[in-house]
Length: 113
Length: 112
Image (tube, rainbow over all chains, first blue to last red):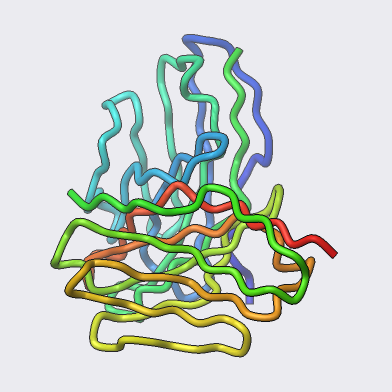
């Protein structure tokens, strides 16, 4: 039973560039949430996808966008990267109507230079 | 929106001692309270959770307590071991949202 998988594990970009991060949810899960975790901080909610639609969004600018595919996998896109976007990006999956437990991937460490 | 405060930010104990981490939340509609453990360089992992219709829940050396009136909840670890060293996050969410708000984390250090 595969858990949540994310790719790539590490990424280095320069300011102004664009980046795409990918996530495959745990088998049987249909909901994907993305979180940003800055060093020494708790995860901050970016957005959640269910049935290929953005269901909820946290306090992040429009530079952050996402997508969910029919197989429930998801992408996070960040445009016009800023130094402050450097963080660990975590994907978490859950089952709508289920027990509310979130399962996290290992994350993508993004460094913006 | 929900705001979760977590204390202390760092907790250092001797092996065998107990450790307590406390959190408060602001949204009275929150009714699901998970706790996550994140070891260095690894993913956050759910270790225990509690719902608002329960005041306490135990799982071996770990227990969580919830005071809905005061909007407080706490994690208790007894007989701590070096492998308990990690960052612990509390979180709170409204039922059905699947979107917990996290605290800032507590770095627990257990000295052998």
